[in-house]
Amino acid sequence: MNINQATDYSFRAVLFLAQQPTGQVVEAQTIAHSQVVPMRFLLKIMPSLIKAGIVRSQRGVGGGYALARNPKDITLLDVVEAIEGPIYLNRCLLDEALCSKQGPPSCKVHQALSEIQQRLINDFASYSVADLMD
Image (cartoon, rainbow, N blue to C red; front, side, top):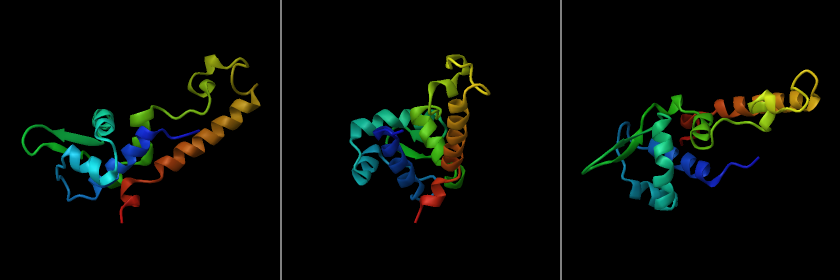
């Protein structure tokens, strides 16, 4: 499993916004420069973060981005799923119909991967953005 570059950049952007005064709107260029994220990439990921309710945007003069929720209410899982979709280690964990052994209980691999996947999800959910702030 590998977290993609977009998710890594999203973690950085969300953490940067969390470190600003509550409700402060920050221009995309400021976020991109301070977090060493290419501007084109930042502009590509922000709509996904907005759609997930993690970030809000403000248009016009003085526009930019701000967190939409309190940092303690945003988990790493929220960010991962906003960018990459649901976490699943194997396609049969997303849809048991894709398992050639019809999933649990006949497939021991499915059972093991399901337990590992659930621990991974729980671990991502156990860290809030507030936990990462200095």
